[in-house]
Amino acid sequence: MQAELICFNPACRTRFKVTDPIYNCKVCGSLLEAIYEPTAADPTELKTRWRARRCSNLPIDQSGVWRYREFIPFLEDYTQVVTLREGNTPLLAAPRAASYAGLDAVVFKHQGFNPTGSFKDNGMTCGVAQAVRLKKPRVACVSTGNTSASMAAYASAAGLEPLIFIPHGNISYGKLAQALEYGARTFQVDANFDQILALVRALADKLGIYLLNSINPFRIEGQKTIIAEMLDQRDWAVPDWIVLPGGNLGNTSAFGKALRELHALGFIDKLPKLAVIQAEGSAPFYDFMKAADHRNFHSIEHPETLATAIKIGDPVSWPKALHEVEHSGGIVEKVTEQEIADAKAIIGLCGVGCEPASAATLAGIRKLVAAGTIRADADIVAVLTGNLLKDPDYVYKYHTGQLDAPDGSRLASTFGNRPIVVPNDPDRIAALI
Image (cartoon, rainbow, N blue to C red; front, side):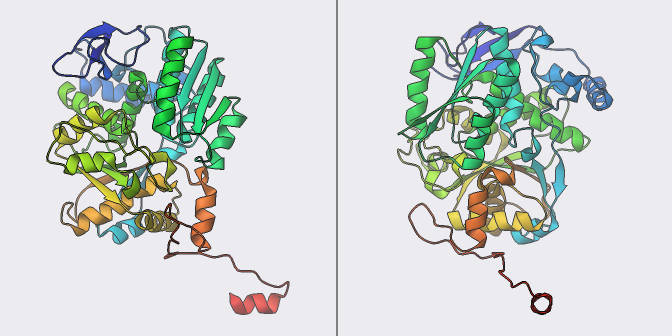
C-alpha cells in the first residue's frame, strides 16, 4: 500500500516521500503525519484476521503492534521489524478506583505491561523499524525516562547505537537504570526537556542521527495500535470516554488519529471523547485550551511535577492534540500533586500498580465526575502509561510520609501504608496482627 508523509497544517498539506528522514514540513515547518492510499479492505475480514493472529507463533503476529499491520502499512519489507512482543496489554477492571472517582465502573488499559514497562514500546518498534529501513546506524532521543528506556532496548535489539539525552537530576533511577542496562550512551544535560530537545534536533541534523522522540511520525503510527488493540479487546464496542495523561501529547495525537481512521474505514460507528489530564505545574495545554485565544500557544519555561513522565512545558505535538480533542468533543483538565499521589495509592489498592503520571487519569476522572462533565454511569477506559517500578522512590516516600511536592511542601500520606518495625518475638507480632 502506498504511504506518504503529509504536512499536518490544513493550509499547507505538502506531501513528502515516506522515506524522507524528516520530522517537520520543509515548506511551513509544521508537524508531519503518515497517510495511506484508500483501501478496499473489509473491516469484518480484518477484525477476524487480527483476532486469529493472537494464536500465531510468528514474532510479527505475537506483537500487539504489528498484529495490526494493515492499519499502519508504512513498511514494504517486514523483515525490518524488530519486536520485543510489545503491546498485548490488558484491560483491568478496578471497582475500588471507580468508587473513589464516583463511577459505577472503570477499566484501565495498562501499558505498563509492555516489555520496557511503558506505552513508548508501541511507538518505538515502529520508529526503530523506520530507522532500519533508512539505514540509520545511530538513533537519539530526549527523555524524562520512559522514552530512553524504550529506545535503548529497541535500538540495541536492532543492532543500532542508541544515544540518550536526559535532564540532569530529573529522571527516576528506575528509568535511568533501564537505559544504562540496554547499552545506551547516556548524556545528562543541565537543562530541561524542551531545551535539550532543541539541542538534540540540531545535533541530529548535523550528524545524520535519526531522532525518535514523538515528533517522529512513525512513533505516532505505533501508538495508534493501542486504540486498535483496546477496541479489539472490547469486541469493537466504543467507550464513551478515553482518559489519558498529557505530557508531550503524542498519545493524544495517536489516539485521535487512530479513532478517526477506524471510523472512516468502518471499524467503529462513533467516536469516544478524549479527556487529557495534565499535572498542575506542567499544564501548558490546559492553559491553552482554557484561553480565549487559540492562536498562540504559551510554553512553560520551568515545568514542575513529580510525575516526571509528563513534566514537559513545551509539548511539540500540541497542534495535533488540539485537533484530536476538539474533533472528539473532549476536554483537558489539570490535577494537583496531592490528587495524583492519592489516586496512585487508590489504583494500587486495586492490585494495579502504575507510575505517577498514569495516576493523573484517575485524579482527572474524579474531578470531571464531581464537576458533572462525566456521568457516573459512563463507559470509561483510562490509560495507565507506565509500570509501578518506574519510580519506586516516589512510592516509598508517599507511604512513609516523606513525599515533598516540587515547591517543597509535604504531601499528605492520605492512604499511606507505612511498614512496621517489629521485634523478633512471635507473641508481640501476633498482638500487632
